[in-house]
Amino acid sequence: MTLGEPGVIAPGTVVRAPVEGPLNIARACLEARASDPAFADQPAFSFLYGDRTERWTYAEAWARVERIGRGLLARGLEPGDRVLVRTPHSPDYAFAFFGANAAGLAPIPASPQLTPAEAAFLCADAEPRAAVTSADLPLPGFDGIVIDAADLDTLDGNAELPQTQAEDPAFLIYTSGTQASPKGVLHAQRTLYGRALMWGAWEGFEAGDVALHAGTLNWSYTLGVGLMDVWAVGGHAMLYGGPPDPAIWSRLIAEHGVNVFTAVPTVYRQLLKYGAPEETDLSSLRHCLCAAEPLLPALADEWAAKVGTEMFEALGMTEVSTYISSGLATPVRPGSPGQPQP
Image (tube, rainbow, N blue to C red; front, top):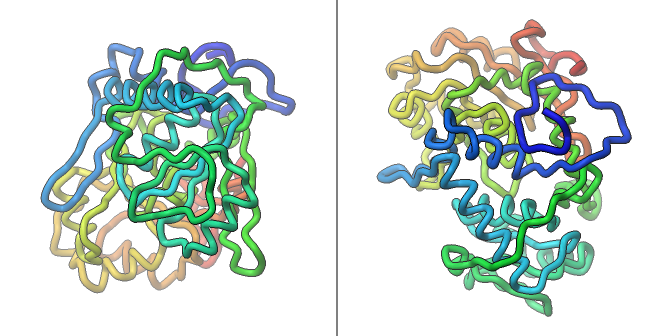
């Protein structure tokens, strides 16, 4: 692959700054597979509700992202503009985010649980020109373009999607603000090359893998590990949006033949307590990933004893994502998140 063409970035690809040439995250993750006859009709994204599933192939997912991107440009937005994405955890959230990215816009993922004051802060600080939201999540005082998530199914336009450059903005994401006001971190399209280091060093995704992530879409952990990285290697990304149930994960892993499960340690702890994984056929699991909280050795040991797979931990931050991890090439050392990625 060259930077000028959509295609597959190999795990572990190292590109030294400055990075030049065309590059777009949505194109590299989805269009590359959608245009490949071997992948076009393969499942790319499933959203699980417990009693039903919505599913898109690579061709279908890219077609929807492309259409939403054209529709955003048709509403008067221009490449480089920022778009706040604040909807309930749903497929609409993912498609709005990647549609904005494909259009050369910079989506700002925001939690639907923000208070009106917190949402107003993001709007004032990030200065988005538009917002994709829903009727039950108002943005008091926002005077930009408002797009109802319910209209995404019909959003379209005639504009051709721009060819973004590697250094162009890709998305703007805010820190959690646990110690001070949240800070916006602007990632360029080239962030995909930074993520390539973790595909082999930590995640170990393979083409055709079924990968289930327990997080919600306003979180970079879910957008990155749950979607971007799975699609980048040709896997099938799954998210859950049904009723909260700490025992649901065992059933979902078994029913869908999940190969890699990703969550925070708390989810694993609850699963062990309520989900009876030792009584469920989880033989499809190759390994599990965890981050965002320290992984206690006792939890990893209990998981290995009852499930029989390793848990690979990672340490990251909003600014640079994951940079220390254990994995297939880095043996797990109890109490340590691993080693710096190459």
